[in-house]
Each structure stands twice: as C-alpha cells, then as structure tokens.
Image (cartoon, rainbow, N blue to C red):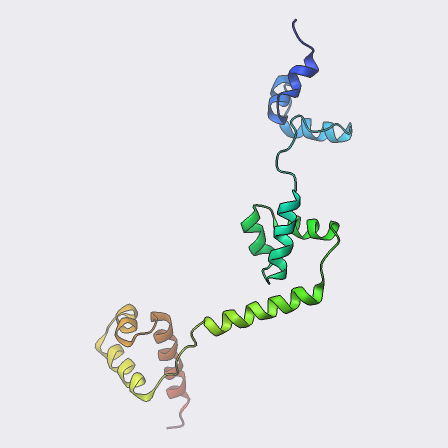
Amino acid sequence: MSANPQARLQDLDYDGVAKALGKSPEAVRLLSRRMKLSSPRPRDDYWTDELTERVIKRLYEGFSYAEISLEVGRTAEACRYRVKICGGLDRKKVEQAKAQRRKEFSSTKPKPKRWTGKEFDQLNACVDAGYSWEKIGKAMGRTPEACRYQWKRLQKEIAALPF
C-alpha cells in the first residue's frame, strides 16, 4: 500500500467517502458531524466580505431578502442570518428605502382606465356576436380577463334590477 488511507479519503467528498466505505452519503455526513470532523473537501462558497456588503447595500436600497437571495445565489434565510451575525441593520433606514421603492414602483405601474358606457355597449355587442374573450380583449384594447370580469359584473347588476 502506497499512501495513508486518510490522505486518500481527503481528496473525496461525502459521496466518494461513502462509496469507499460502502455507506450512504447521509450516514457519512451524520457520522462526521457526530465526531466533529471537518467536511472532507473544504467549501469554496463561504461568505466573503464583498458578498456581505452587497447584501447589506441591497437591503438599504429597499430590496427584499427574497430578491437579494436570487441575486447572490443563497437562500433568503441565509442572507437574513448573515446580516444578523454581522451586526444587523438600521431598521428605520431599511423601512424608508422599502417604502420609497414601493412608491416608485406604484408610480411607474400604469393604472387601469375606467370603463365607459361606450365600452360597455361594445362589450355587449361583441359577446352577442359570439366572439371569444381573446378576440373581445384585442378589439377593446384590454385583457381578456378584464373583459370577462366586467361582463360577469354587468350580468350580476342586471339580475339585481327590480324589474
């Protein structure tokens, strides 16, 4: 035998060690935790100072943990925990940034225009003609769902009339 068995196992990950021992990777992982051993292969995805600063910067810009997690490739819980162990945040500034971001988003989002009497007449005519909701939506410049919703709402109002 050429080398020390421990030296040979050090180049393997949990799956490789498990295969060499004839055990499952989960069993090897649990045993190594119980024995307080380090993982077979050092991790290359530790939190760096740059990554931590990036998460904190995004929080102060008003982004949520879920949005940040997609950007940095970690879970939202991991980002939250990392910020917590690094000293936390100024909650007031973060809430102000979130409010500002919501305000900017709501101002850029177009508000739906109100339905006019002419549009209701056009909707009635299209439905009476037997058009599909997609065709009606295109003709009216609205989504098919909006047209269908207004049609159902009109039907309820007509049914509620006393005569």
